[in-house]
Amino acid sequence: MRYSIEHKQETRERILDAAARLFRREGYGGSGIGPLTKEAGVTNGAFYGHFKSKSEAFRAVVLSGMQQLKEAIATLKAGQGMHWRRPFIAFYLGQRRTCNIDESCALVSLSPEVMRADDETRDAYEKILASIVDEVSSGLGDLPGDDHDDRAIALLSLLAGGVTLARAVRDPALSERIAHAVSRYASALTEPPPHD
Image (cartoon, rainbow, N blue to C red; front, top):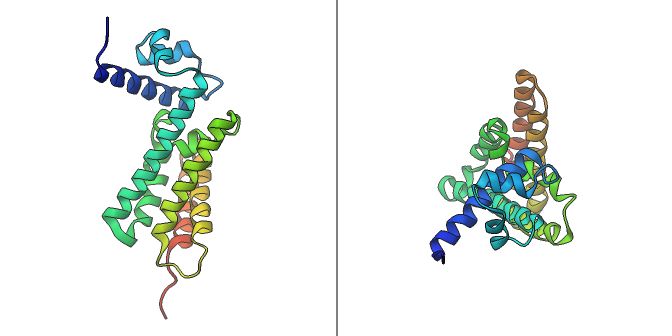
């Protein structure tokens, strides 16, 4: 039986969605093809019809998740203009910190897995991360100096690290305190100095 192009695309998306949830929840090493295909509701044959290996599926998940982050930043910038930074920081330290781990941002949940990934995945990650840095940096144009790329890197690192720490602690008050502290310093990093 031949499947339509639409059916094949839907199956691929279902596999990617399941893989994204599983890799975020269980990590790369904790996720096998069997649990992945079960979560997606497909056979092993269907999986291998779309991906040559688990590492190829992981790479696709990482790139898709990072692209979602980039698009979210671009959407905020388009809608909020130069006032996009505070809503982004609030969203990242709010909803991205408290959502289920299998729905969390790829920057937080998948970066540690990328450190142990193959060279092809790491190269692809570096490329998409550089484009996210560019997206953030281009939204810092009203800040003095020429260190916008460094500020963008620092902002992304501060947010990702803050969410990681806030997710790791069990005490909700401490998690909130971490988020508040990170928000304070992230905002200071990205706000223009007050006019005299």
